[in-house]
Image 1 (spheres, chains in turn purple, yellow):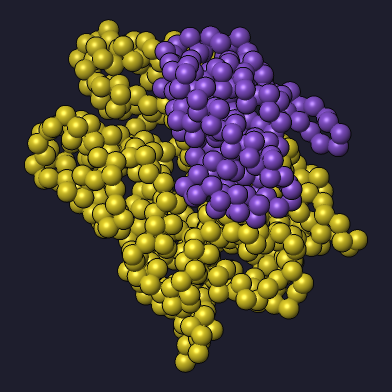
Image 2 (image 1 turned 60 degrees about the vertical axis):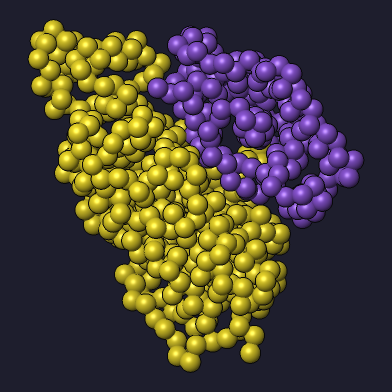
Length: 170
Length: 430
């Protein structure tokens, strides 16, 4: 029962806090692409991969008191900060989730700005294409973000590092 | 003459209860409607199990697809000769609108969850693979199927085109809200689509709404909100959906165990093995699925037999409000009691959450999660809808979620051990 919710709580447990909804969306997507057992369905949207299912699930976790959402005003827009509550920790104890390798990936992703996570998740969204085709696609669908060639190359490298990290820990 | 520009000798019209008439003048659209992959949508209900709650909900994905096409056709007429709109994209938009749901299968939601499928993958496969749809699209040029598939996948470079088919105020939603309200017979799904279409304006990368049309958009947002809680997420529909998922789970589990079915489930084998190819997938429709459910009522396996009989004869599970934070211990107790009572809790004790049926609430696009609806002021500035409308702000700020526990009241009433029965009834407040 509610295993999908429990996995998300585990992610919050590893992250301690996640600042920004966009960052959270991309972190879960990247984790899913790294074959961690997240089942939230994603579609491509204006700002890259987005899951309405994840948004709803996080709202549920907040309403249940497992996660705390804090709204902060940051230079003209609102930003949301998520932290795990004690009740969330208690809930997690009902589950035996073997997600240890997720810890280091979450730590690493949490340090990245959401703009870069948007690039990484977009690259992963098109991972069925060749590298050149991915770069061409990213430059088309992310024209406004003006990602540099260096940033795109670093993003590819970062994905490889995450995969290695996951393998080593596993 | 270029196939993309070919017109029919005579306009074809479909009578439609929502839009009155659906007009087809382009040869390619008529040819796409005639393909077997598109005709298959006649045999798939738009609202899956909702007919068990609202008996009128018998409309198909075929009529919805035609409706989305018709709305986009009208939008392209309104956009004609306006800045930012390229009329060369018209046929691409119409084709994508018509085909946006072509990959849906029967009872999509449950099938996707249980068999780990995604109808969007099949939409792409039908458009790009060896199909009648692909053959028609290729008559435009070899690259045209790719463009159509990218518009539907929302990865096409012209975001204005994408936003007509898929945004927070798109042709897909406008059609299904009106159509679902009409066929379910509810009165709260209505909004003034004519007005909304008249105030839509193309911009560089999205469709925006003239501020004078704000109240019509408010009505549309309200209708979305109402339809979600009153129709799409109706607890009885969810009960049927839960049973349907459990039938599929049970059948798969029996297959994996090597159980011998009286009727070999040929149409399910590739699903059970999670290796569904396009040919197998296109053969599936609701007629096929219900045929198996009928047959499985005669199976030796008690659980499969019972679940199929429940689904076909609408003997659904009862439900109660369930808060996982408060009732977690109760759930564990119930699970144990069900086992003792000889009722398999994995099939008869189910928690269902609002996120199990993701539905797009209006999102104001904070932190660049999703592109919101933008109003266009007289000064040619953009304003996000919920910042201008207190009605929309109230709805989009409200986080309403819900969890329910489903159980078979009839089986509980037949439990012979009085003590176990008493304990179960106490927890479920029977």
